[in-house]
Image (cartoon, rainbow, N blue to C red; front, side, top):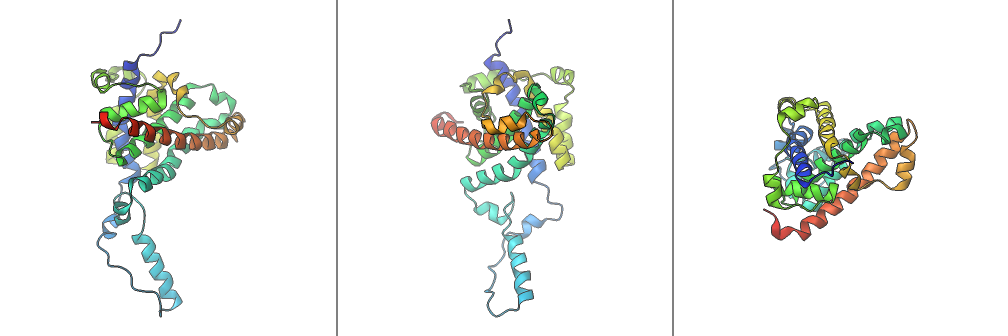
Amino acid sequence: MVNPISDQHVVGVLGLVVTGSGPLLGALTHPDPFGLKKRTHGRAPSPALHGINLKDRVVRRAVDSFYAAKYPGTATWDRMNPQQRTLWWMNRVGRFTTLVASVPGFAGVVADRLPLQAALGGASQAVVLCAVATEWGVTDHTDQVRLLAWVLCRRAVSRELVRNAPEQTDAQLKAEGIDADEERLHLEARPSLAGAAKALWRYGRMLRGIVDELDKRPQGRWPHRMLGMLPVVGIVGDYLGERSALKRAVRLADEWVRANRQSLG
């Protein structure tokens, strides 16, 4: 008989993913080698376009589009409300993490029987949920772990339990081929999409220890799951399914935050 997974083990693993989500999200959004983000601040309003020729009008619109870019660190981002930023994380970063999580779907039904598929989907949802939780003001590590425990595993855990639950040790992680400190330093030193994708896969491997619990997370709808069983095109079904599941996960997270606002740190 398989021993049930304890709350302590669940929050211990999720705590590692919350810790790693910061560098991963930074690798996806912070790079600005030419200082373009700073240039979007303090710009005077553009004059009217009336009375200028077509060439100057096209140039002016291109310049306006640059200054209106929606990206963390830009002037437009500072003016966006939490709902708008949440949609940005879902539609920009969420598409990337979902694509990475869908790669095993290339093998069709074979991949569905492997724990890595569910673990990668859970990691994708976890990273985006950490980002949107921050936009909602939920920045405390303990509360983010509690949020993930509820949305991904349907576990209602207290702040005290999360604080007292031991995380997996370095020895346990290295036994699984994971060096969390090395991965974090690599992302901070050389942020890139390839590095972020590699990190997401590693966080998926961390979640394999609670993969049975991840069956409780929001899932794609049945047409997506049926398509995901087919070889090659299964990656499309898994992508569409994970996108749908991510939207439901964000809605569940929003409900959890509203219901637990009084107990948040």
